[in-house]
Amino acid sequence: MKKLVFIFISLVFFAYGDEFIREYGTYELVKCERKAHDRCIKVSDYTPIKITDFDRDKEKKFVSDGKNIYYQNENNYSDSTKYYSVFQTADAKTFSVINDLLAKDKNNVYYITKWKNIPLKDADPKTFEYIGESYPFVYVRDKKRVYAVEKLGDPIYIIKNADPATFMVLKENYSKDKNNVYFQEKSAKGIDAKTFEVLGYFHVKDKNNIYVREHYDYKPIRGADMKTFEILTSLYTKDKNYVYYDSKIINGADSLTFMMMKEIKENEHEYAKDKKRVYYRGREIAGSDSATFEIINRNFSKDRNNVYYKSNTNTAISGICENNFSEEKISADILETQVSEELTGQFLRGYPAEEKSYYEIKEINKPLFGRSSEAVKISRCETEAKDSWKKLENANPSTFEVNYEIRRIIPAGKYSSSGIPRISESYISNDGKNYYIDFYRVDEQLWRKIIAKYTNISENKK
Image (cartoon, rainbow, N blue to C red; front, side, top):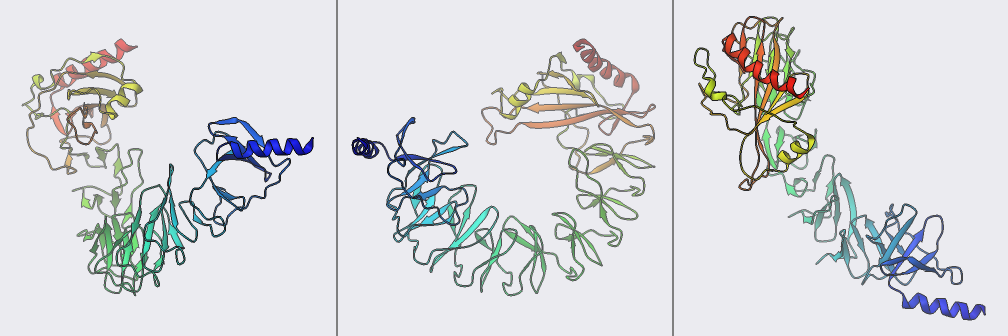
């Protein structure tokens, strides 16, 4: 009877598909019908099969029974059970795992994607080996080439002209050989490989210069002192003599006292200061007092003397000049409506399809409460350079406060190539005596009329 059961199960084993499951804690091979994993038949009760694991395969994606190589497939739905399929064409006796994206046998090197396993054309299995990794890249080589493999699943890159024998992996996605320096898969032209040193993700040096990298270009920071050079951010650096933004000297900045200012919730990490001045993106905020300087939000700041506004070329309400303010330019009907997360999601996805402006109004420190679908007529008083700073005329820093933020959203629409909506912003503020929209001062009567319109919407919602 035992023999009959054994024969029956063996026949079933060979008749069923080429997948099995592996149960953690055991070495049981379980053969299954394809697409019918709930009807698996255990064969190890009568025919024990030894499963071989592979080095460098931490997730147990590959196993072997001595005859076949099995690869963990996409049918897995349980934490305790993993399904495997036959790894076609692989030679079990010579098979080895290089990392979670690459494997090889005597015939091929295999690049393993989510859906299929691709033999790597022209790669030499005999000499193909792992070099090292600098996340997210893994570096491998054979006798002819060096390859960079992105762990996120993009194709393999061949590093052109790299010398496999002397190639070494450094930190921050940099590498080098006897002839060249590389960032990811591309060479860094003009940099001396023998004296090359990685300072940070954006900064490197050789015997000649310290460089700041922008994409795959390397700009020398000329005159930088190599012994005292210090990286503050991806763009701010300094040495004993100078402070630099990108690759240029910030004229007048005091290196000894220069430091980054604390980040705020809007992620404005581009503020820095020394003993006298405050800087934004490498430019001085004229007249600022570093000892009392305070960031209000991403567009406003103040010190003991002044209130400052960072000009934004994408202003929601424009054409605002003292004694030259036309109510017609903000004549859109403000409709009472709820700006929900769903609506915000529609904006980010580029809907609605037509490019019609929407306006969101936010009372500072309170939720967003209104929007309008009518276009505002735009007519700027003057052209402002983006990220330039203006002092608010007559503003009192001790009593100044920002009251409302208005955002104009133009959905991406069907004609947009980027799929990203355009967003403009304006602010309504006051100090008790003076009234402002952005950095333009307006008369109190008009200011209060606008505030009343917005406040009514807020009160109606309640």
